[in-house]
Length: 335
Image 1 (cartoon, rainbow, N blue to C red):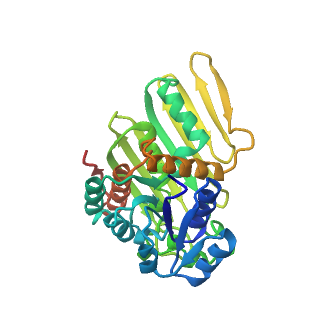
Image 2 (cartoon, helix red, strand yellow):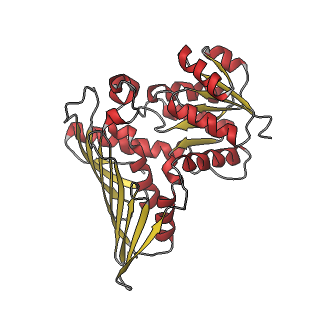
Image 3 (cartoon, rainbow, N blue to C red):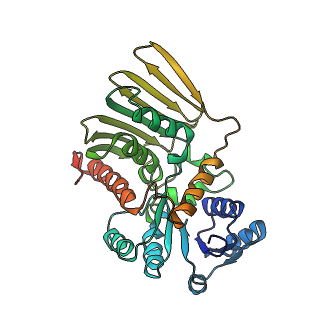
């Protein structure tokens, strides 16, 4: 099936290029890439040996059965709607869109046409977060009471050699800003702790970075269970940091991406147990696992880890965070 399935990749930046490389390594042969920038299309064709075009109409005429949407965030919804109307299954890079307006139309099309959808929150495939998920399911720390997550990295370091001020992260019209960029933290907090019912946030541009978007955000969440969540996000830390701590009645779990480990404190044993990433694990492994999962979803042998309906809930939390900061008030999330 997969050898004959034609997959269109829309957007040939760093993440689009990564997915093309991974799809080829997984045996997908019918690949077409599209990017409005001639230089990117030419590079993809040269580096990966796939056909690459700059005309979207030509891309759609090829009748793809699935589309990967890896263009700037502000284009996600329009591209997804067009693909869904043609019956394409969808992989959409996070976040699902740059706002909630118009998403109900996409959700309705997906339901009506019974489309497979996966939104690319690759951290759900990270061995550290998978370990935390397993520990929580095994009641390893008793009732979870609070989560504290942090992500920070200096924005100019994200894509060395590129002008960060021209990147979508820096531009409001392209859907940038650290809340949407780092929606991973919102997603895995909801994945690990359950649905969010209440959001408060302070966010703004605090640094001297030459960007139009917020570079720092502090979110406070209440989960349906009653547990609390704190999420710190920023574009300004000079040393990359991505961590998560969950405190339960019977222990604590700590994950540190940079240290490549999960630590689990058991109250009964009064000692820490350390779980390291698998030997030889590389960051691309989670993207490979994510794409393997998408292909199995296309074969209908697995259910999507995060479909457009779940990603809509992530986006609703992100939107509430922005609204909370603007209004300096708590925002309740509709269930």
